[in-house]
Amino acid sequence: MPNKYLYLFFKDLQFRALCIFSIAGLAGCLLLTRLCIREDMELRDLKQKQLMVADIPWLQSQILQKHKSGEDLFLNGIILSQKHPMAIINHAFYKVGDVIEGKVVKSITARHVNICNVETPDKCITLQFQE
Image 1 (cartoon, one colour):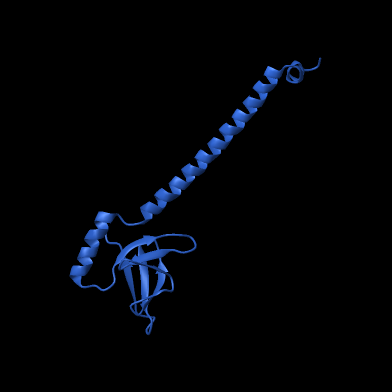
Image 2: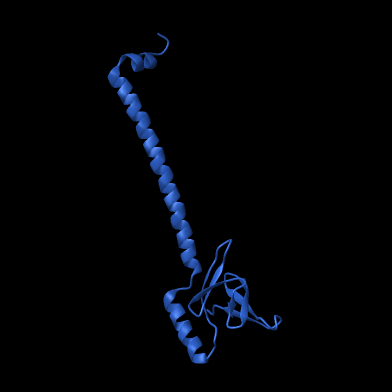
């Protein structure tokens, strides 16, 4: 008898069931661990995206200041993405290349948005968060 566990596996029904349930339990634990890690990564991504969007009370005060100062374009928020960063300007979403009030969105970064006139591309303005 070279291996007593192998002999028990083939001869003892309870031992065989114990082995199968142990393997199934281990596989279940590995699957749950993988799901938890994936969910944790998704939560981290969500938290990072939430940090990229402006804080709402601060944003509301900035909107009121912009309206009082008479500026026609104001930056509500920035959503960064590797493929399609977006800017929230006057409560609407814009990506690079979009036209807003005769101006083209040229670039979007974490802190500011560059917008240039359609007729005179050398005249640009920068919308940015003020701290």
